[in-house]
Image (cartoon, rainbow, N blue to C red; front, side, top):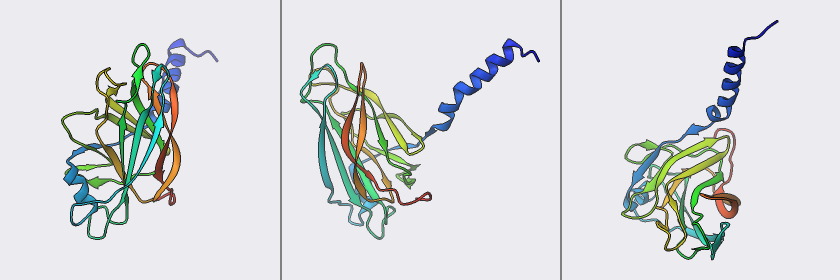
Length: 203
């Protein structure tokens, strides 16, 4: 049986679309610092547990910093029974040795995250501010979340050096894991993070 070139091209195009079709775009909502606190605490004040880790992109001297904050959703709040996760990237103490290699993406293996009413429904929040890179999109493929920044986060004196705070809520409590930071010019490096412990297929 003869198959036309047009059919073969259509079949190839369909196969090429399969990986992207598996990625689900998550809703990203801008919030204020108080707005986040009120989601997790009846008194609109949270006491986070902080952890800091460092990473070095190729072509840079010094290290970038990743701050991870976790905090429980207290009874009487929209996030009751969940754990909040906030992230902040700081490249101000890194220095480019040539063309700036900036942070463009971060990938975490998290499992499901919760949809909450952050003023409007969403899975991911960004704490709005006057400076810092926000998120252009967040996609989920299986258990992996890919955070793509709206602007590159670059070594000190190379432009924007910090992200805004961003994060999500999930059922699982925090456990240590490895995330991945992607450079805008080259390289993907591992970074220590804390992510939600998986609590089952329906979590």
